[in-house]
Image 1 (cartoon, one colour):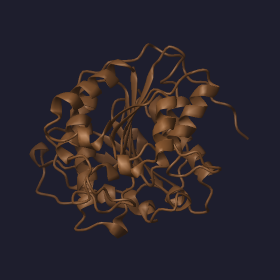
Image 2 (cartoon, helix red, strand yellow):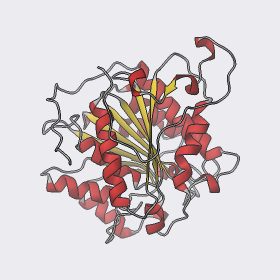
Image 3 (spheres, one colour):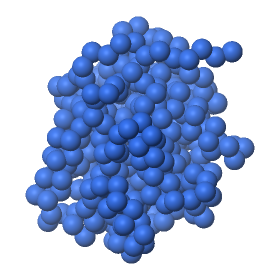
Length: 339
């Protein structure tokens, strides 16, 4: 599929750089294969787009700084070694610098929809967890979904993020999704792995139950709970045709991910989180990923950035090797004309 013009971004992409051990495929790292030229990639290649926002975190009374997450995540990923050649596009960033989170969501949605319609696997680099709603707008605005396509949203997170607040924030994205799905005559197929009971009020658990949310708590996701976690992921994959995987880095223990707004006192071991990512990626189902809450100003020795980069790396390397399970052939999406 030829490259097409994508929706404009707020911040143009720049070339990646990193460690270089010499020429040849045996020395490949991510910075060698990422291009800022859409003409250099085709359908099936991964596309990165950043979401420079911590407006949602600010509204949710968290610690700001996640707007710098895309930069730190790119830097941590750039020098990771690739087992085989891939091609990738950096499409640039959407930036919420004026407090207009709703406008940022709309712009991110347009950028993600264009990349999906061009056949790319898309990874959105956040940003606060408000990024998840903008990613969702991209999915629902793309040609990837129709009335018969089952969307599944899997959130790796210590929090449900189902707060009922007067304005959107990093605590509201999945309730926003649920309301949009209800307005469209559907039920949000929402699953959460890693929920921390002390970090979620009874009201949030009741909201989750009312919406039919499936979840595992952090205490059910240890390294000795492999069978339970595997069964949960298998059930999730059986429930959907297209996957929206959203990773809030506060799902990890604070020792692995100190650089987040709300570090986890318990958390899910990175071994378990990576295993889940690999299972999702190996399914071959169309996949949209976003990674949220990396706050470089709170990080220690780049632990959180490195953990996030490893998860993204595992997802993309695994999905590149997986047999693709295509969704039914869909008509070209009809986009409204703009002035």
